[in-house]
Amino acid sequence: MPIISLSSFKGGVAKTTSAICLASLFCEDGTTLVIDADPNRSATTWARPGGLPFEVCGEKEAAKLMRSQKFEYIIFDTPARPNDIEIEELARGCDLLIVPTPPDILGMDAMTLIAKSLPPDSNWKVLLTMVPPAPQKDGQEAMEALKAQGYPVFSRGIRFYKAYKDAVAQGVPPYKVRGGKLAWRDWAEIKSEIIQALQG
Ligand SMILES: Nc1ncnc2c1ncn2[C@@H]1O[C@H](COP(=O)(O)OP(=O)(O)O)[C@@H](O)[C@H]1O
Ligand SMILES: [Mg+2]
Image 1: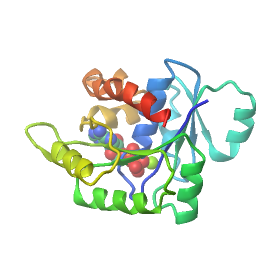
Image 2 (image 1 turned 90 degrees about the vertical axis):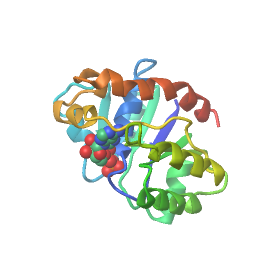
Image 3 (image 1 turned 135 degrees about the vertical axis):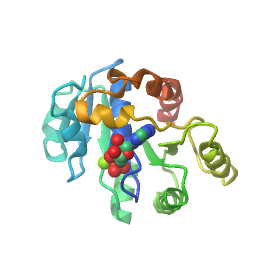
Image 4 (image 1 turned 180 degrees about the vertical axis):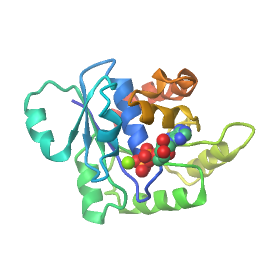
């Protein structure tokens, strides 16, 4: 039962969006549960209309649901600004910790802070999100900077598409909305890299 957690110091970097997309991706392979540990309950709000092909539950319901042993993938969405103890617990409590960040200074700075707080043996990887479309080079430049500094980073970023906001509004996975299939290619293409990263 692979467990993937999303974490960042900053809010609005696409943790919840990534959690829902990862679950939409992995539920093709096995029953998937998203644990919504953010008091804002954004993932729960996204799920409310009933159009997601997997379950979303609150943190406090999770133990009982997991006892049913019906889930093959667990995705853990968390609030921003975890303290050092919470980061350590998060890193230890999953198989892969994904730190999403847009390719901008504030996001990247927050990412380096979380990197410093992670226990040295953590299995974690940066995911560039909300990457501006070509010909803007922000994504490519951020990717090169991260690699040059030795950060583990997924080889492909998630580009900025309106489909993500529409998907929240409609309570469905992004590939279900107009223009969403185009956006979804980014996820389809990093799936194998995520599976590889899960194996540590
Ligand atoms: N790739 C993307 N393209 C466009 N908008 C995005 C993308 N990823 C996230 N968003 C939007 O950015 C906002 C913040 O995303 P969210 O997942 O809620 O961040 P967090 O959980 O880190 O606070 C939301 O309005 C979401 O729809
Ligand atoms: Mg969130």
